[in-house]
Amino acid sequence: MATKIQILGTGCAKCQRLYEHAEAAAKAAGIVYELEKVTDITRIMAFDVMLTPALVVNGVVKTAGTVPSVEQILALLKA
Image 1 (cartoon, helix red, strand yellow):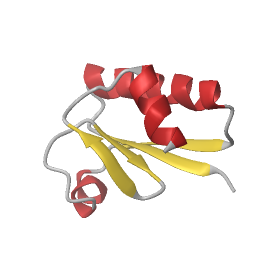
Image 2 (image 1 turned 90 degrees about the vertical axis):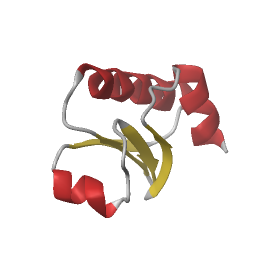
Image 3 (image 1 turned 60 degrees about the vertical axis):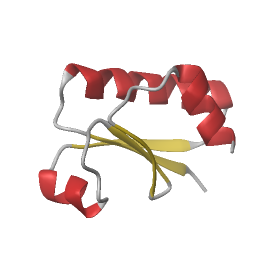
Image 4 (image 1 turned 90 degrees about the horizontal axis):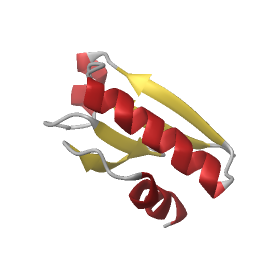
């Protein structure tokens, strides 16, 4: 089963950087993954996220309002 990774945000530079970091971390982890950008504010609000960008893994919000490093995201994916 693929790990579902979602990036919540409106498409700002930080959102794009988080997307790139998440993709690099997933590739480094060697996992099967599905990566999705969520830009619809209604869908973002459904996650109860007040700050973007946010990183969601398999439906669980892992970070919000920050851009973690590739290494930090890799640790979250392995946890």
